[in-house]
Image (cartoon, rainbow, N blue to C red; front, side):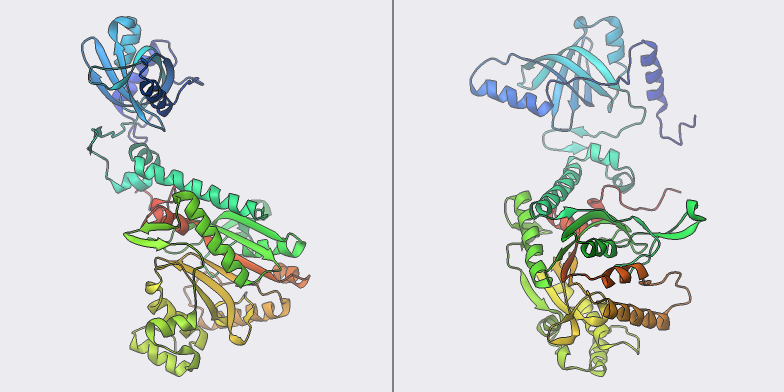
Length: 505
């Protein structure tokens, strides 16, 4: 056994062997509790409010957080998922073998105890232990820092531990553990909101032969059972969710992992969580109201208010949110009236702002890039950016009254895009024409070193909407980014349970 490879501690392993030699189990199958630690504290509070003597016994368990050994006494602090409490062991209450076993315990071991509650002369709430069981002997050194009421000393600050060994970090950092707990509560709130609005939760394939629904570098794999046929991890659930709509499921959603083989930064991770929903007989205006009501309600359910503080800025998610077209945003923030400018004029505006562009850039791409480079930094309060150029939105219905644009919205807050939504394109002929045009444009600019194709055409998807797809509003929401905002977290990797990081050498 290579102790170094698995980070086992030699001294702890020796103690494990000595404990096993006593014949008592140190990795039992179960342990029946009567109280969690927070329940003990609450019950004591009830006795004291009534001025009654504390008089009850408990069976509880937790991880050893500190030890103070004296000649005939032993004080141990244990911690469970709710709180921490002190234990008192008196040598004359235990057999020699049990006292021997107690002295082989280390910080990080998990024990179960039964005993009576009392307060010490210093008024510290304590359990006078009458029996104990070792529930798990740790063999890895756990860097538990010394704690006082005011401060934790020797706190682990190593980023390697924080992101690579999440189990250790959460064990030692209650604040970040609470943040991950809140993450899953937020997801539960989102799911419940969707179900309460009569949406059906569905699933879509994680492995696809034709990836689509977004423009992104995919992760490649192969299917052994199909002669190693090439396959890809899902970059978006969109095309399969629309198949549900075609089949007659009117309101569907999924919360899933997407995989994009691209950059890692403060707001991107190659594996991320998103939700998409589709609702027949609605358009993007209807879905804007759904989106703002969802986020506003979740914020209120989680924080008791629609106002939060994110990185020292107050953000108000109360409805309605501001609506601003992409063209109006350029006019408001940069004094660019792009609606009345041709591509030559837009190139001049890009040059003035030192924005790189290809000479064959189209009007719509130029508008989009100008917006991204100059306007997003102004979008602090919740805002819907609506009516995007058709060139960047191939699966969206044209805007009524202006064929240069489409009926699309992107919600922003704190300079971050939170989602994407359309009045979905349901004309199969125009959809195929858009895909083919997109493929033609991409072929012209395909880099020699590019090893994947953007938006390959999914023939079966075209056939599906060719069967007849009702008017539909579709929405994608970045779950991780919503959680970042609602937990006041600057980096996405802090709210992803196991973020992508470079492996150890």
